[in-house]
Length: 107
Image 1: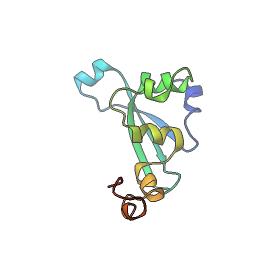
Image 2: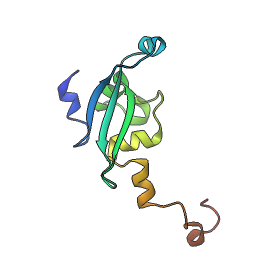
Image 3: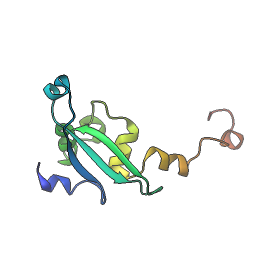
């Protein structure tokens, strides 16, 4: 693992090799777990990504949505970029009660 690439993660996020892979996953490639606390809730959040895809994004040669294409949700990509977990976004922009403010578009 290239330690210089690890420094491109957000402060407080760590990258750890994920070893519990089945045979098909091992054929696809190595995976890493990225852990960190949400910057809004301060609660721990964890995502699992393919190492080669994470490295591709961390080099800066590719947009995150073009690099992390396998089993990575928009919420997971957002956590890598901003440090905000899905729960943090819900805290900032709650879905409940919004419809009375803007109409029926938000449900």
